[in-house]
Length: 179
Length: 214
Image 1 (tube, chains in turn purple, orange):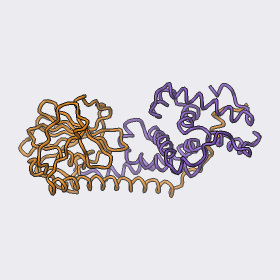
Image 2: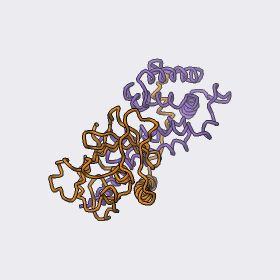
Image 3: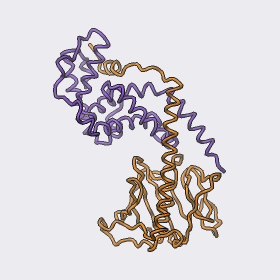
Image 4: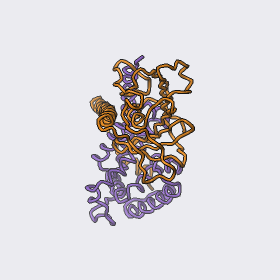
């Protein structure tokens, strides 16, 4: 007989517990994927959580809600960047002259890194964030980005080179961390 | 010296812990999306059934891409001509994790976490016995045979392929933005034609079901 109401209630409870526990972490990841664009980051998180709610039962038994939400974050970012009104914005070859502040404060560092991330292509940015912020291995990144492991390696390497280039004048970054 | 992970951590910021208002807003968006999806599926199923009844035109295979002999789809295409009449499911009945909006009148519906089993009125064998029954499952990694043929589906960007396995018609349906596919297997003896099959399967809500690996 119908236990739909009970299942719905259970889904709601579990979903709310997950959001309470993990929304902040998702928003931090989304902030990096959005290169510091707080509005876009919030949009990405809301999109991910809505899709997560729809797929809650399946996701819970499959890859887990956080993994699923991260995948949606990445896909939503890439979809967002494909929108025509989004393509008309940003994407500059060079950093703005007024950009980077000296590395003597975390706020300045934060802004510098965000601006540098904004100059990476979305997939490249996602590869860097997945590999070096979330700590995914190459295979996991490839699965999340729906591409080959070779593509992940090349995107990550090029992304790090670009970041190093962009940040080298402003920050001294540990070489080891840029592998 | 600055570690990249530290830099990224700093750039990620320190958002506040979500308030109950934010959490409830996320929940409300999810519930709204769920209602919308269920409504859309129900509407699509009923529209398909209505269109088939009114026009009497079957949903036919897309012949442009055929590489094998076409599957013969029952002409006429109305639910009554298929020998199966789809009716709205009663709101107080449930098929477990699979929740069809329309059901074949007089048939028995059983579901566990893995399959939706529809038995003709005169079949009373165990639900675990799929012989002579229509079976719907979710498939995570489907492997349709090369002879599978596309079928036109009047649903928002959904697509379907179909093929025969002996006397059984198999339909694989993909819903947009969902990597899981819905597979329905209908023995020919049941008398379901293609449009009735698609109308039924498009009405199935499957969010709580467990996909097989295919």
